[in-house]
Length: 132
Image 1 (cartoon, rainbow, N blue to C red):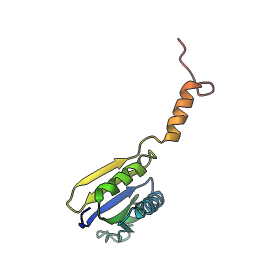
Image 2: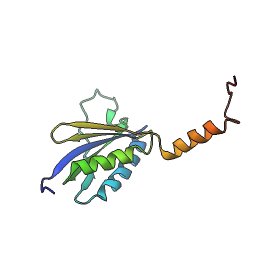
Image 3: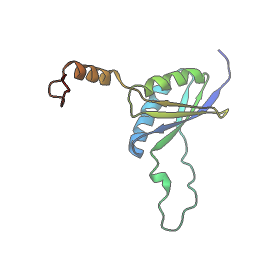
């Protein structure tokens, strides 16, 4: 194992700011379980100048940024990918210090697969069925 420390910015997206913050907190707790990993919320970015009376866009952005410092970014990426794939609503962008970007979008969870399979095998009450 190398003594090199890697860092990355992790953008966690949600349906709205509260959802993004909830998801970011959950991901932060997961990543903290990895040995040698530190994760914290990034300080809020300074809003761009707005016209008088205009609301800043930072209130409407459904994204929360975490700062990750770790000995192995590859392990953290693997953990992030596994976490994201649990729900379709999850979306994360990892921006490494070297500028490389990796995006992860949620898949279909095991529970959703079960519902889909149960719905396919038992079509009663699920709507119109084309019987030929």
